[in-house]
Amino acid sequence: MTFKASVLTLYPEMFPGPLGLSLAGRALEAGTWSLEAVQIRDFAEDRHHRVDDTPAGGGAGMVMRADVLAKAIDHTAPEGDPRPKLLMSPRGKPLTQARVRELAAGPGAVIVCGRFEGVDQRLIEARSLEEVSIGDFILSGGEPAALVLLDAVVRLLPGVMGNAVSGEEESFENGLLEHPHYTRPQEFEGRPIPDVLTSGNHKKIAAWRRAESEKLTRDRRPDLLAAQPLAK
Image (cartoon, rainbow, N blue to C red; front, side, top):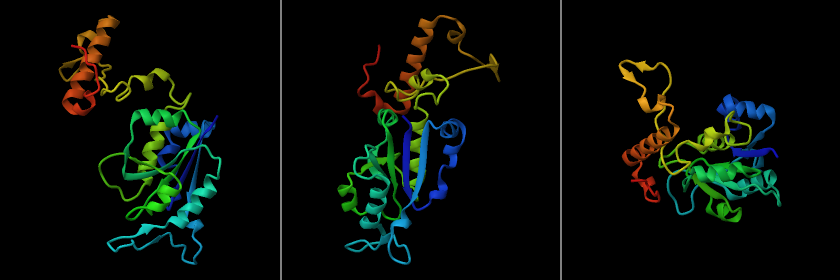
C-alpha cells in the first residue's frame, strides 16, 4: 500500500522541495509514497480568489475562511477517505516519534497548512482536524512544518531506510536521547574513540550506550525522564 500525502497550501510550489531529495525523494520516485500539493485558492469563488477575511471581534491580521477550506478538504478527501486530517498549528499537540510511527503505519495524511493569524475554528471542528505542532515557536506558515512531519514519516515507511534497525535506535524511540556516535579515524585532534566501543564486547557496548543516553537525556531533556525506569 502506497502512503498518500495530500498537502493543502497557498504555496504548492514549495512541494516536494527537500522531500524530492535523498531517501524521501528516492522513495517518491519508486512509488513507495505519493504527494499532491493542492492550491487552496482554486476553491475560492470570488474573482480575486480570496481565502481570508478580517477576524470576528476585531484584531490584527486575517483569518483563513472556513467555507473555502472546507471545499478544498472535501475535494481532496471525500467522505470515506480513511486518512487523518492534520492542521499544522503552533497550538497543536507536539509531534512525537510515537505519533510519527502511527502515521507511517497508516494510509497517508491530509495536511492543511495554515497562514495569516490562523484558521476559522468552525472549520477545525466541522472537519475534525487534528492540530499538530512541531515546536514552541511561530513560522510564517504551515508549509515548513508539513515538510518536517512528512520527512519524519516517510523515512519510516517500509524499505525507505536501508537498515530497518536504524530507525529503532534513535532519539525518542525508547524515550531517551540517542547516545554519541564515533567512526574513523581512531583519534581526532587528540580525542580517541572510547575504548569500550572497540572492545568487541557487545554487552558492555550496549550498557555504555544506555548510560550515555541517560546522561544526555538528564542534562538536555529531563522532561523525558519522568516516565523512564532508569537503571541504577
